[in-house]
Image (cartoon, rainbow, N blue to C red; front, side):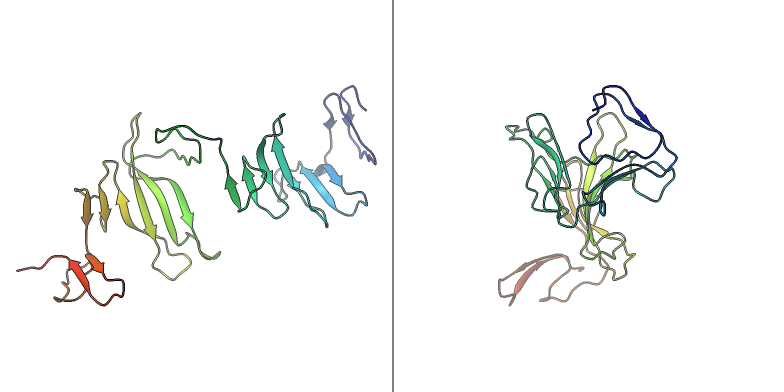
Length: 239
């Protein structure tokens, strides 16, 4: 038990429990300033690296060979969980039992106003015309920009900023191909498919200038039977 503020300039090995009732300072030129190992000394559980710059992690937590408990648990004095990392790699925020790679649980909400409810917030400071917070989806680890995306495009640069919401999918087959915008909901509530500037509540813009033959599906709006045997197409025809 240390009741004063000790300074360690050499290797200190503790085989039992160590308690510091004050600040403990580690003064070292070694890359590893602090290390916790298992009882046999074969596996490192916690490492603090002080080398700058360093290719090693500043704080590294490694599970033991027979790790069955959590790797990290941050909670308040009432044992309410803030952040938990399980030994399987799932991360929980507000929950002790994350079932997915990221599992967020907020307190029970009685809020009825959109924008005030607890949850997840993505914020990026942008100027008009630039993309802000974005959720990127990828079905394959080799995709540079993902295969689909949902995000916002800033439209105003004033105190009460506004933005459009876009939906994008990728059609290219190369890893470096980017998702392309397919649909947008503007700040005014207009929905555009094939256009980034819809002027009505729903505006569909078809690509190209070739018109479909009568009785065939168009690239506009199609209504299909469940068996896809026939359809009703809504488009336009030059006369």
